[in-house]
Length: 343
Image (cartoon, rainbow, N blue to C red):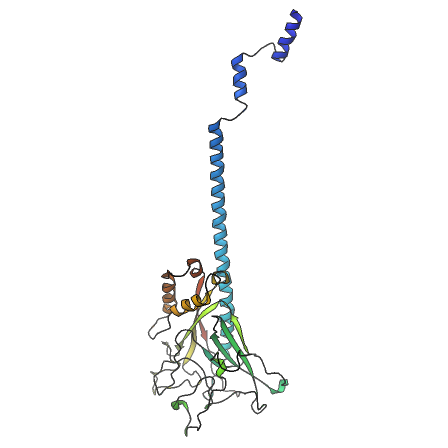
């Protein structure tokens, strides 16, 4: 019997000869688990870490989204302004051809007021869309180039390549004063004696969206996210103006005359990225564009863009995420020196 008892004791103490007391067994049993307080603290720390990690991810996603929006707007603005720079640098500057450009001059001088989005049309030696059916020998190197914002709040460029004079009886070639490009000439710009009847514009569809043909086949959307277009002139005397000639010259100039007084055209545009634009209706985009004021005489460089930004910052009636997606740009597009070459 004693032998049996010794064997059992050895089994209990693992052969060490020591049998733990009842309290020691209880303490060892307790050390194998976590208390409720320990579990709560652990869960709380885990939740806190998850929240911090989520906030970090959200911040990174927000920054990435804003960065993509800005890159989207920057890319479209750069493409448009680079295209404009080429068109303006190749502008045909001759006193015997017409230009459709804005002017706040008072009558009897040419007055072309353009409240809201501006429009411009001129001849330029750049490629365009030729009418079908003409050989290369019939195609002139000159195109009629125009920029405008269409009814869908998107910027269009027209590149109508022209045929040589006397090549066609149906397709209009380059026309000379007194035939205007897109709007009638004032009496002061007409030669003497005054033609009768007064010549009508050769391409009214260049500026009039409702004029035939509709839609204009040589016009295409070049800036689907550009909803505001404004420009003014840097004159060769160093001043800024919304009249494309120097009224302070002696003797005073009173007509465009081949853009003789203009050193550069300063272009301001407003761009809204595609993700922000879907938050607004077409009517809201139109209202937004109308709130961006026109250039006025006396503005200094950068003031127009600053005025636009102040307006955007104060908007409370439109979604802020959409307004934050609007980017403003300004660029000076210098005109190349005039040439005397024939068209």
